[in-house]
Image 1 (tube, rainbow, N blue to C red):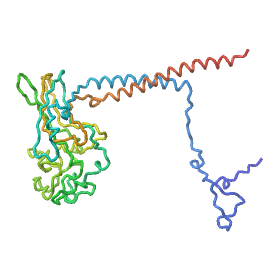
Image 2 (image 1 turned 135 degrees about the vertical axis):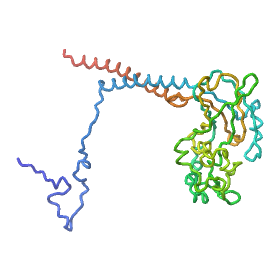
Image 3 (image 1 turned 90 degrees about the vertical axis):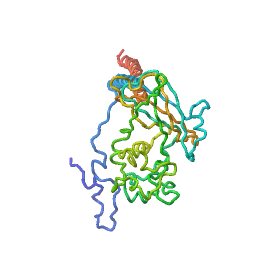
Amino acid sequence: MASGYNAKEEDGHHSGAPGNGGAGAAKSKKPDNTAFKQQRLPAWQPILTAGTVLPAFFVIGLIFIPIGIGLFVTSNNIKEFEIDYTGIDASSPCYNCAQNFSWNSTSSCSCSVPFILDQPFESNVFMYYGLSNFYQNHRRYVKSRDDSQLNGDQKSLGNPSKECEPYRTGSNGLPIAPCGAIANSLFNDTLELYYLSNGTKTPVALTKKGIAWWTDKHVKFRNPGGNDNLTVAFQGTSKPVNWRTPVYELDPADPENNGFINEDFIVWMRTAALPTFRKLYRIIQKKADAPTLASGKYVLEVSYNYPVRSFDGRKRVILSTISWMGGKNPFLGIAYITVGSVCFFLAVVLLIIHHKYDNRNSSADIPN
């Protein structure tokens, strides 16, 4: 028997339809006869059976739980010590500074915060400063910068981006360098650490090099070219409103850490995603024959320059070691343990259900 198949009919053309040139020609809405439009592409659909689902749940549980335990133990082995020096409580050594200091203060306030380390810190110790209730992720705050200016572009240096408003030009009409709200709110507390032994204060060596990302230091942030003298390079610009010194005096003793390539400045310009954050301040290098920080009494000398009362913030210093997975963060280990435990529990429950009802179905199939 002959087939009545017509390729033109499958393409949306009927044998009885008039030609394209005819007056009564009507365009068909039928999709083209292609594998994609007619949904004839090869596909694979998994068939979920007890023989595939149960082993998968068991394997995930048996893999995730040991990994989670390893991550959790590694995180707990990281030593961390936190010192809050906000000065909220009247008994705090920094209480007077917190109550009296503001952005309009012409002189800094100093305070000393004693503390005791119960355990020695081995290997390199990373010293962070932390802020709370500071929203660096606010949209207008994040946009308030000029990356071209920070990259040393001469045109942007004299004519900053409008995104920097209202910190684009100073009261003298000169362009601000660096412009924007992020740079204007630069963290400027000075922190020094001393070890107390038999009534003697021994300063702890703090390394300020290597705290910024390499790409930031050597690619994203560059000083204006054409002159090694930064005073001349930044001539015709104004310092940010809340700064006491211009950008070319951030570290005049070290030309490789001055101006836009100052590492403290670079670290601050990388905005945080959450309102409570920490940023690397200094590194305490490992000692070959002794602990990096021995157990005992210490004192933190603070030059209190950064007021936080206006936004109900808090300031703290964190001393921490690191491991192969970074700093102390138990969340990842807990997440792995939780997911693995849930999968293993579901596997056991599904196995019991399958065993129970599979036996019933098998008994029902047996003839009388």
